[in-house]
Length: 151
Image (tube, rainbow, N blue to C red; front, side, top):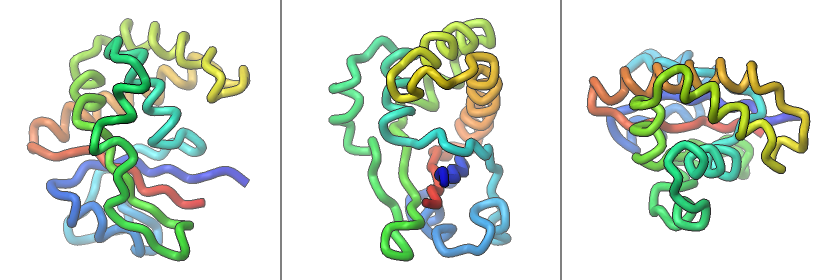
C-alpha cells in the first residue's frame, strides 16, 4: 500500500489544516475550494527535499533545516492523515523554472535513491509541470503550498 499525496495551495496554515479531516481531502473541501495536484507516492519531505536540492542547488541538509520543511499543519487519525507544509523556496523555484528545466531536473530526480531506480523521468516531468503550474497560481494569490498525506 502506498501513500496518497494531494498537493494544494492555501492562504494560511490554518486554512490548510482544515482539510485534514475532510472526507476526500482538499479537492472535496467546499469553503474554500482548493486546487489540487494528486501525486500518489511522491511524499513532501524526503522526495521533495531532494527535488528542492536539485532544482535550487541548495544542499539537502540546508533544505531540511528550513523551519517549514516537513512542518505538520495538522495531524489526524493517529498520524494516518497529515497536512504538511512545503518550504517557501520550492514553489518559488518550481514557478520560475521553464518546462525544459523541469524535464532536466526530473531526469536527475528519477535517478535518486528515494525512487530506488523505479521512477520514469517522463512521468516525474509531467508531475513537476503540474506542480509548477500550481505554484505559479498560488504565488499569484499569495498562497503557500501544502500536502495532505494519507497513509
